Image (tube, rainbow, N blue to C red; front, side):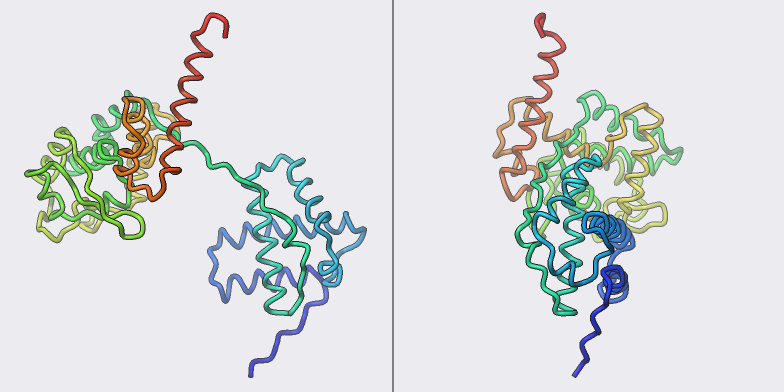
Length: 311
């Protein structure tokens, strides 16, 4: 029978044990461990000032909900937004769960503190002109005709059909066969759910132009290849667009995913209904699609403020 690890005496020793456990047993990502390190150091530093001395485990067990809320208030006063405060609180919750499970130290106050409600950020779309600029001129990034054709086909598909980058890069050559007969693609989205999306004639033409120079246009080959003949990595596609947006002076939010946002936003502005846009995007919930109505409302408000004589 495995022995129960001894309970650390100080909260700082417990913190270090928790971080070591995350690295060695949970194999947490380095960025996660770094974020937890920062959050917990700040939490224990606050308690040292708040309680008048460095806390031990008995002090943690005796914490009141008011103590934890005072710490959250200090984060707010320091300028941390709700999302950041929620991340810090998540780190503390994880630390307290570790103390409970590994050392039998229960800290009931944490259950009385609600996580700050984080409002999802609004999708950031490009203008119609900016999105079209990407699809028409992204080939300026490369001097290789094959890579030029690939990039135009890929980014035209992202904007023209609203695909996620992973959905587009998961396509094989055989999937493009339906373009010649029905101008549709069957894509696999989140949760391995498939959906059929229409493809505009201009996008079909761009994909056909790419297939004409595709180095290995066998049915089972990836539709979009990298320079070494493997399936194109999302990081490479992101780098291509990052390079182009600097060449063209596009905004920093001009990313592959912004083309998907642009697809939905421009459809809505053109009179598309939410249910149809939900189906095209592959959203499981209509509430996810409804975020685009806020984007459209925000754009209308901006126009009103800019143009109304009394604004």
